[in-house]
Image (cartoon, rainbow, N blue to C red):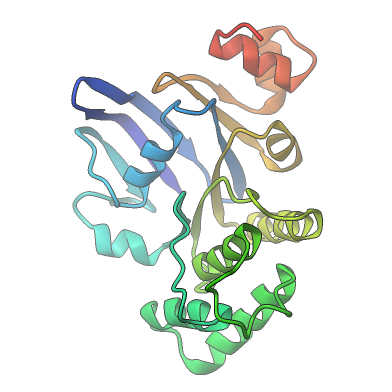
Length: 240
């Protein structure tokens, strides 16, 4: 479970995250939804300990992300906005390297790699060096790398960006499997179809603040709209 309370982050005079509070529960897929520049990526970076908040707290399974960053990192899997794969390694070697960093043994690594490669349709690229990979191939490799150690908490920044239709379908089913296993899944996106297809709860961020938090049905009711997209536009206070 991820608990965020009173999170603030500024860059010079610009306040990117302004008193953000929400929870992402075990056994649910929570969507962090907002327009570009809303503060989603900055919020995620503080959650996975890449960046320290100016104020506020982040707790992952009860651990403070600022005071216990190494313990928190062992319980999370992260797909950052910058994919950052190692170009001289094959796709499989990239995944295996991250498994080794998590202390996984050879058999557990092999089984997890095989499952992820099959799920994401990576069979044809698994043995290739990643230099020259397409955007979609890099994303698949980065997703597999993030999930290889079966983390209890999964944080994904725009996970389907660059994926083809079949890989997107495979990833959706994989995330639903994590949910069914009681894992906590938090994904940042601006794609309404991803939210509609996956999310149990939605946290809407605009201008660095949480403007709404609830189930899709609750948000539609709050906005007085039948369609989730129309509710989103009304709640962030923008005119289409």
